[in-house]
Image 1: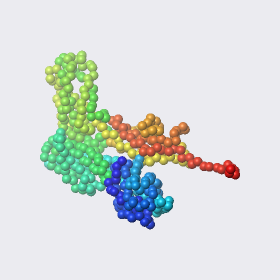
Image 2: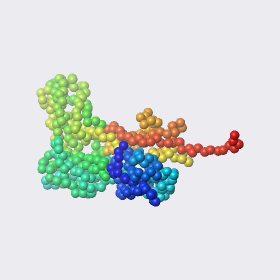
Image 3: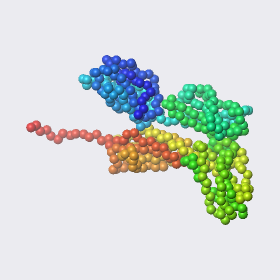
Length: 447
């Protein structure tokens, strides 16, 4: 359970008018917080007349209020938890030793704390720019509801020579969305753009550029046209990759080795990753499929080409700059980000239906990545009631008979590499909204 970064002295007394309690007044401004569970400290100035404090929260900027926690003055903090991100106003109501509430009516509530809960990292996309003279360049777009690009630490641009260990920071003017600089080398340069929102969430993206024009490929740049989405590639959910292949046109000396060459999608240069020994003595042994395994350092789109060497060391030439690979793979080990926005249990004519609203984000979603399920316990077992849904953000479920009267809901998102992200409701969803009534049957004399 995290504690808000600011100690809210006198928080509760600032919620109402006419209190005789000494306090330092309300907190101004809004606090951004990247956790959904936190403590809200308070001080009661040791007023013995106060017996209980009640924390009220508004999710609609003060139009309606809901009591969400209670505490005795000696506890000195409330605990707050929310299943969703959002904008929350807080006010505290007190109950004195005579049972009177201050304030008595919610119409008199005034927010003394405003918090934006934001757990989603910024979505960053970096695009290579054509080189000019001795300079390379990139531009970028950043999507985030709570990013202030004018803050000095909001956007960070770094580069390094491809294969180097250390990143070199660049000075970026506040609010800029592109930059050119002289890298001092003609080879490939890796660039990383990082964005930090006001809640402290961090997102980034990378690309590769060069003075030789490595930012522009003959078959198109994925961030300028649609070549990226149409690229025929195999998604791999691990940095350890297995590859199988067949050998063709094997001569009498057999095959002694296979070289694995790779290129990055937005680069022209090729690099030899490894040479694998192959024990094929004659053409008859080449009829069996061959397998090799290798590892990449990080996520990305890799072009793969294999070059076989005969038993006497002959083989085709290594791939040349700009040449298409034999096979494309995308290594993606990042889970989708999933957030449940709202759960609504319908009443009246819509009784028996439940609406679940969510937000799911990932760079490699297919057409039907969403799965919905429920369980009576957070550890399961989970029962799927909708699968292979489009990422529309909303689903109306007509609940069948025989369901438990309350349960947890889970939204899962599966990307093309098999990574699974999920969100589970923090509390059980109550689907029994019946309001029991009492009807008096008769009155009899007491004995």
